[in-house]
Amino acid sequence: PATNGGSSFVVPNITQLHTNRGVIDIDPETTSVVIAAGAWTPHIMGLFGYYAPVYPLKGYSMSVSAQQALQEKPNDNVSVPSRIVADSYMYTSRLGEDEIRITSIGEFAGWNTKPTPHVDREFRRE
Image (cartoon, rainbow, N blue to C red; front, side, top):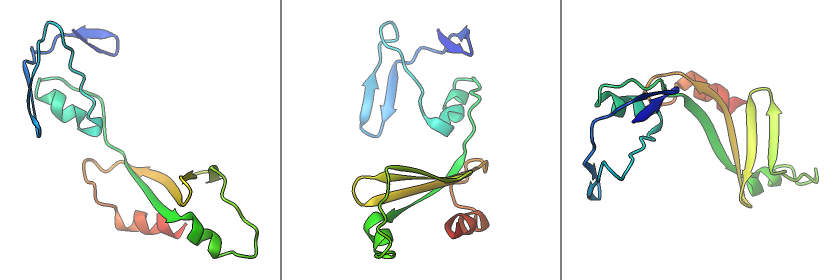
């Protein structure tokens, strides 16, 4: 049985998984299958006739070179800490020695993965 918010339901026996690397045989008596497909989970669960209350959120982020950012202010004696909250809606973190990742808003846009031009421009302007 599977669980959905505390209640159990039985999914059909899964005997094979077809992947881009071939077929994997499954023994439904000894093996559990977990569907962890992010925003695509409702589509997969729908194949079995079940609803999964998951909806995609399109996030905006960009990465910049830490060295390049620091070279732009050579006289300021600036360093980049590992985490910075820039303001109420932007978060910056350091990845490795030379990358800064900046993330911000999320947009409910269904399964459309293309950035919304005016949202992307505003994010990059900030």
